[in-house]
Length: 413
Ligand code: AMP
Ligand code: GLY
Image 1 (tube, protein in one colour):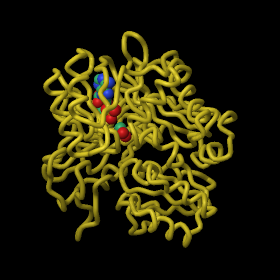
Image 2: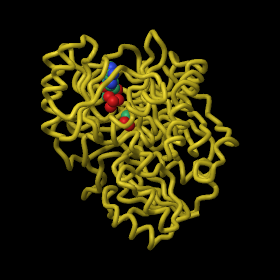
Image 3: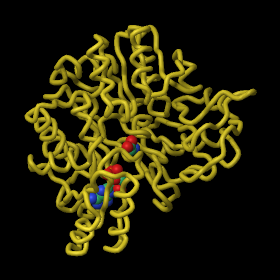
Image 4: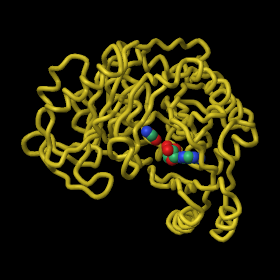
């Protein structure tokens, strides 16, 4: 098979790596890819947001399968357009990707179908949002309705901060804001493959969104991840499947927009049980870098089951070892950061067993790879338990160096 992966971050490097492991895959292409992906695939200079460019490339390559990593092209309808052109694509339609593309849509759907989440209400005007917030002690989380690359959510301490957030998000993003109940608990990412009808749930993972150790500092795209999650045992995953993932897939089917692809539920484990914080219409980044190395089932087989209604027969096989993924970021990230700095030590790490390096923000420099993004790369290590996997990941990371490199020291701990 010839496969095309859309995207060029760490998640897409993990997808390309996983697809390249398949006995059925002969050729992998990526757009735009990155220097790490280029070791495994032919990279084409087409942005993941350029739908006409992706369509042209796919018409030219005629791949047997397109795998779409990021949310922006999914929400814009890249899968509808590829499938309409007769090119098989793994991912939800634009109508189904609204689960991620509109937080108001997702909340209203879960409410109509009794799927457990926080109390909420959406508003077009700041005055109404403020009145609602001031009248309710629970209403302290404010979210922009549309895609905001992780920057559209404010978890406020008090009514004033929540009101300020509502005003700012409406001004910056337009549209609507969703005001939610502030829940407390530990978070877990539970993903499922679905063909629109049946689901096959992946092992749970946990992301680390704050930039500094002990969950301090501002939110980022994700500083690391691990899987499995000791405080989310099989019984809890089963509950999340029965109470959240299956009802959501059924609701989408009933409402005429069946979801086919990877459905990602961001869950908070509250004292009252699991509650949905958000849905994503794709693999998480960096969860994919921890999950895909543990997944033993061929991703091509998964994609076929998802596209053709065979998920009920899919039995996922897992490496029972734990995976820990640590992201190395550029100085200043998640604020502004320098680029073009040389990265050293990747050859040594490539020799280490049970260690994988996934490139994210890297580029080819005059004498090897250089930094080209905020999250530069991620190291994933596998070992019999989380502590050993974390230790192995940090030993590997100690070989890698670029000016200003920083990372969290407590991933998986
Ligand atoms: P989201 O992008 O919707 O997942 O929100 C980003 C982060 O904000 C989540 O990972 C949580 O840490 C936090 N968050 C979102 N919604 C809530 C909520 N209703 N209560 C408490 N924290 C939340
Ligand atoms: N790791 C969270 C996300 O991919 O949205």
